Length: 345
Ligand code: 1HN
Image 1 (cartoon, rainbow, N blue to C red):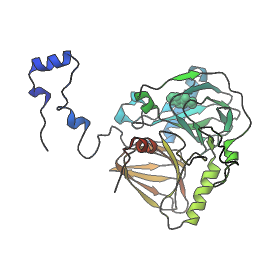
Image 2 (image 1 turned 90 degrees about the vertical axis):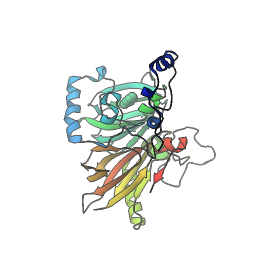
Image 3 (image 1 turned 45 degrees about the vertical axis):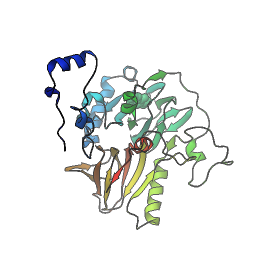
Image 4 (image 1 turned 45 degrees about the horizontal axis):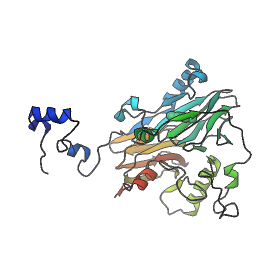
């Protein structure tokens, strides 16, 4: 490849004059912003063990009252981006949030989209756009852009969930802000009942709800049952994977990040091809060995890891006699919309 001129090759007075006028020569930086064949990725394969996070989260519960935190979260930050950036990848933010019995996280709405994957505990709920969504382990609850949301807890044990947001991207776009609100009035009705079965939509289907996000809560009992049914029905199919979709349109549930539930059969090894989006894996049930290039992570229940884009990932169910269930998040909807989505053989 042709060697391009360096900044140092230019006379100092010329460089000074450019700088003075807010001008920059492209050629010394061209290979940096446009590297050959594969992008430069700051995202590093990183794993976070729940056994490490939980005691520190409970300690945060003692150290910082909810009124002083609004959201009591420990962020799963990728060291490749710098911890202070609070990024798991270019577009993904991950955080573990604790809500203690009786606590209240007040209503707000914001431009970044969020989802919550419930990790542990019963009795908490989140109210999104007037719908009260009970939280149980493995449930996926959406709080899409602009919708009011607040969290409460009527139970007796700490509740922990994993927040996944597209905050890094929305912040980078200089489009991230929030508005605080009043406590919401809960409306009757529940999307996960209205859209309770695949292939059946409320009639008349032509007059769709006109809500951009008709279903806000995706119960784990349903996703788990769907994975098991699919594994039985399609024994020859390698990847037992479901995408969380909008039940009225079939599109990804949110605009920027994609969310999936995956089942590894007993002892199964699943090779995922290198794809352009970065990816997050979180164990809902079971245990898996995740290999990302030369790195290998042994993930137990409630553990989380991330992999950079353009990188093949191998998932192995370490249990020989039971299935392992994994929640995945990635940047596919974003990459597809922007036309940069790629799968590499
Ligand atoms: C947020 O609103 C929540 O509502 C959680 O629980 C994590 C991280 C960054 C920005 C907003 C929540 C968040 C967040």
